Length: 146
Image (cartoon, rainbow, N blue to C red; front, side, top):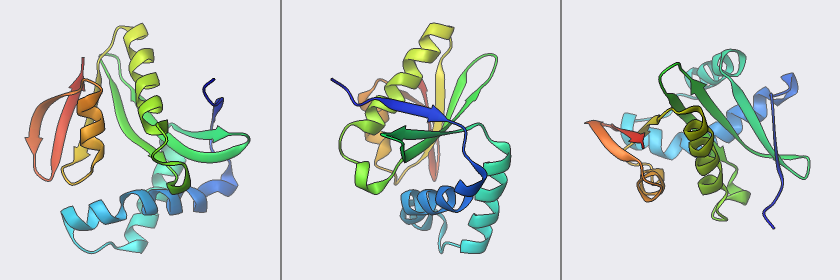
């Protein structure tokens, strides 16, 4: 039986967790693509996203194990971010989360689009799940499904 996951809006006291989780997940790739990480600039960006983006915290057994930001447009869904905390990685959770987004978009009759840094190994996951490359704009690759 698959683990039961819950999705909820972030609580105000999770702002620091959100930034720390994002930094841990993306810092290495961002530095490879753009150069040194500016913690103050990135914290400000994360704080703005925390206030303005449709973030869903992913919980298992009442504990946050990741988050996702999916932008639902009239003609497509945009998979902005799916992040799994380090201790929960490599167990199929990222695959499950992306697959669930794909299934929901399919039910809505819409494609899923994304943009991923070329150095991020998640590109392999997206390819395995059937996303196709629509454009390369280094340091990013744009993809779409179906």
